Amino acid sequence: MPRAVKFSRYGGSDVLEVVDVDQPHPGPGEVVVRVVAAATNPGEMMIREGAFADVWPATFPEGQGNDFSGRVAEVGPGEAGFSPGDEVMGFTPRAAQADYVRSASDRLARKPPGVPWEVAAAIPAAGATAYAAVRAVRPRPGETVVVSAAAGGVGVVAAQLARLAGARVIGTAGDANAAFLRSLGVEPVRYGDGLLERIQSLAPDGVDAYLDNFGAGNVDLAIKLGVAPDRINTIIDGAAASRYGAHSDAQEQADSPPVWEELAQLVAAGKLTIPIQSVYPLEEVRGAYDELAARHTRGKIVLRVTPD
Image (cartoon, rainbow, N blue to C red):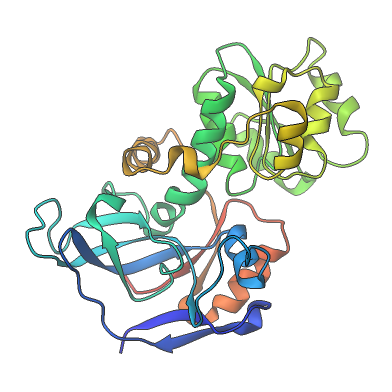
């Protein structure tokens, strides 16, 4: 029988189980995708732990995972946009970590040939979030942009998109990711005590825009650096955004298949790198989230659901 990741109560990764489920079938305007890879995201952990229970309550047994890549297995009545065998990527909340996903056809994008399955699965959530964040601060050629957590799943995409816009990018990260960021044309700076002074040393003429992907006072730091609030975006610290009038654009502001396809085409053209730190089989989903929870990820942690 088809499998899916489910949890029947709020809690840590130990509540996750891989269980047998019924085979889904598409209705009008829908397709069923045979999933090859599914991404993991920090927000999924928070939902599973119950942190968003008042906003997005779970319906037990709840599914897990949102963005995925795979091949169309079946199309619904009258569906003309996709055919069985088409390679796609999509975003279906709390359902992606499964052998099969039923999706509205207008919530799928085509995967370009040559883009790895794991990379394609990472685009709809992290890629769209980075896209929206960069668009919010409008980097221009010659400007200096700071990207926090620049080696993480969102930060590494945002840093490269800002570079593609012509900006000089300074990325905060641990020492272990310094060489990696340099390989992408990003100037690394170590996070932690003294970060303000280290950024000022690298950018004595000032910082034009700041992308916060981590919280922990990054918006306050951007203000101290003299960045105008409308050139600051945070995807995590809504309170700071409200306090200063900064942007808080994230996935919702770029959650569309045309954006996913644009990012995938950049990957296919060799202009955008989405690093995959680890790939776990579906059965080891708990281990994947345990590694993600450590918050020292370079790029993305992805589940391989079926062989290519």
